[in-house]
Amino acid sequence: MKIKADQMAKFARLMVSNSAPCRRYLNTFAPVAARGESAKDSSWFRRLRSIHEPARLPSTIDKWIAEGAAIKKFHVSGWVYRLRQIRMYPHALEVSQWLENNKIMSNTDRAMHIDLLSKTKGGLVKAERYFNGLKTPEKTAETFGALLNCYCFKCMTGKAVDLVEMMKEFGITPTAWNMNHLLFSHLKVGQPEKVSLLVQLMDDFGFAPDLYTYNHLMVSYADLKDYDGVEKVLEQMSASKVKPNWCTYGTLARIYINAGFYAKATEALESIERMESLHDPGAFKTLITLYGQTNSLSGVYRVWESLKSMPSKVRNECYLSLLIYLAKLGDVDGLEKYFNEWKKSHSKHDMRVYDVILKSYLDRGMLDNAELLSKLLIKKQVKPTFKTLSTYMNFYLKKGQTDIALQHLEQGAAKLKERKYKDWFPDEETVNLFLKSFEGKKDTASAQKFFKIMKGLNCLDSKFSYSDYSLLPSGLVERKTQKVNE
Image 1 (tube, one colour):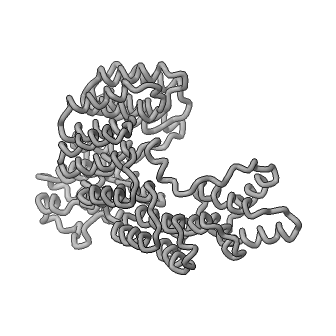
Image 2: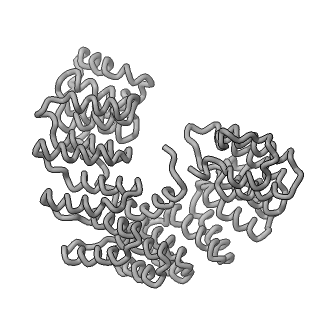
Image 3: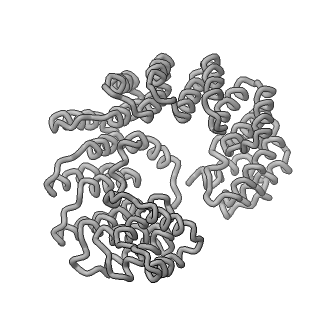
């Protein structure tokens, strides 16, 4: 699925409302009832997860039973849950299939089976086929809910709504979790206008909106540029006695920042700071990020001091957010101070942190410092990220040194081909800088090299020939890479 740049920006806006405390409801299945895991049970599980060929798992369980192992149904259900939890989906599916073959599936097991089918080979088609093949008594709230979750995860909102209608025909009421996930999927596909209608449908089912519903409703009004509607959601929460949490105020602050209402954003952030028993590192990270976006250095430092007063160690992610915004706000002294503090307190070499410092050095023209740090990282065998390479490319392109920038592009292209998934590389800024560097120049060799690399990454319009230099420069601007326009 190709995602446009404006859709990516929308996902970023939604991240606050989907941070750790707010995404718990996205977990479809509750853990197997606590039954005091035995040492033997733990040994069986370790042996199962160590088997490289998932297809061998059902016969392995049969062999253990034949040898006299006292394996109960709850053991096997527990293994399915735990394998899914660590994302060994093919293994989990094979163990789940053992339950199916032995006809000892509960409704929760069937729901898990649907989820696992959607996450493995065959995907959603097999999950749908399995659900459709269930007997009527087996089409329960659990199995309906699992398939609905699959549709929402894939952003198949049409099928999701149709399934909700089918649930009504079966006399099954979707849970608040089901509906909240459906709301979120509509936001992800750019259909905020449908969210309020779905909230009304929740009311028809007989349950009131909860905290997550209100958070999603707030974002839907923001996407529609209806800021009065956003504030009315807060009034509805108050009337319904639903207490906002830090995610709610974080979402509100981000909405105001995107709209340019910085005073209102600050009020929302101060509401988070006034909360009692605020210990979640995610809240402090969000506060640092959003104060940074309002250009409030005092707000960033005030939150940082509050975070440092907590008894637990300051997490790496919080340091990363602090350094990012100290760099953006131009506090060079603070950047160096807390970078050195981070190095002393964190032994892990997080390249994302070094990327912030490298960019700061290059932005200030301190190439020697950047090269010295890069050599140190190479010595420590810390690999550069795509961000590292982009930072260097942008630096050299702005200095007119296209040849060196191309060397970094080649390095990134080689790195990209080694990965199982595609990264957003090179980014739009870098592509535009390359195109600009070709304007007014007769350096067709560099242009040819650039387009050859990009074509190798499948990033060019298939109709474009990189040997057609008559298009330079105006034609190039019209033919940006697919990654930029996706």
